[in-house]
Amino acid sequence: MKNFTYYQPTRIVFGAGESEKIGTYLSSISRRVLLVYGEGSVIRSGLLERVKNSLDKEGVEYVEMGGVKPNPRLSLVEKGIALVRQHGLDAVLAVGGGSVIDTAKSIGIGVKYEGDVWDFYSKGLVPQETIPVAVVLTIAAAGSECSNSNVITNDYLHLPEKRGINYDVTRPVLAVMDPTLTYTLPAYQTAAGGYDIMAHVMERYFTREEGVDFTDRMCEATLKTVIRALPIALSTPDDYDSRSQLMWASTIAHNDLLSTGRVGDWASHRMAHQPSALYDLTHGAALSIIFPAWMRYVYKSDVKRFAQFAVRVWDVEPDFGDMEKTALKGIERMEDFIRKIGLPLTFTDAGIPYSRFEEMALRATGGDSFKLGAFYPLTSRDILDIYHSVI
Ligand code: NZQ
Ligand code: ZN
Image (cartoon, rainbow, N blue to C red):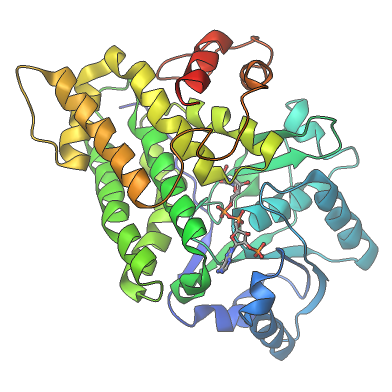
């Protein structure tokens, strides 16, 4: 196990009805916030109205900015930065999922920086400060409510580019997580969110680090929980038990607890960001195409770990005479699961053309200036092969 520092500053308030008290929780952090949300689900569900009532009750003033799209855009981040400055606000409240939260995080660091906020994503500039970001979470998926990551798409470029950064300064100060808010999710978003949770665990699970049994077991428990809860949430959207398991799993999968003492891979995420940027493909759906393809490409480099994944996560009967067969069976079971929850396994399933694969592979490796992933470093040629394996 490697030495590590684990930093988790987010105050988490979890449970049915807690979102109604956001004003109380927020009032000790700020009294003038930018209230950020997406394209309308919070209006249709009545959540936005309830949040505003709670803020009014506690005397928290707000300026609204809706319209965040999935694969959130840089142009709206800039609008948010301008609104914060214009109205003298001192915090951002995100009411939504990963896209809304990432927009809020990017506004948070952008407000404290005189230059172009895209510099953080394109030039390796390290953000030193942020205004506080608080969250009311509406989907179990990205884990942004406690993560140190945020991912923004630059929509000013001729070919839009999606880039992520990872800095502890961006972790939210407050996350209110009310599983009942996820009852209104369309099945496709529930499934895509569920698979993203699994992907966050698997990016960490596939490591070369030895002596990580404790975090292996936590990863396996998280994956098994999602595998059990997700089909129930899909068939019974208002099942509190499965919705609450998924919501808590989404946070644990990506708040870095499962990374302690080990180095994750993360190539699948970066490969998945390319079609999401160009074709606005849902993040979890991009991962359901890429992750199994990556597994098939790399499993031979560590058959033992992939066999462990098959046996402990997918209940595959171990074949001690043929561990490769055991490993492959695990990947097959995961593909069956993806089919069952209604996500794509190929670019064709997702309606994505394959005319830009070379550009996508080059972008994922910074024009071949680095290899992608820690478990199995990939060149742009490898990435091209992986993309081509799932047309
Ligand atoms: O925009 P509205 O109308 O609100 O609808 C949203 C959106 O269409 C809808 N939705 C959310 N909650 C709902 C709901 N619809 C009905 N009822 C509800 N309760 O769901 C759609 C997707 O929302 P989005 O915020 O995009 O979902 P998610 O949480 O999956 O976030 C995906 C984004 O996060 C990034 C992804 O790349 C993607 O851009 N990620 C962020 C990470 C991070 N910051 O740590 C890590 C992840 O790996 C990921 O990259
Ligand atoms: Zn993800």
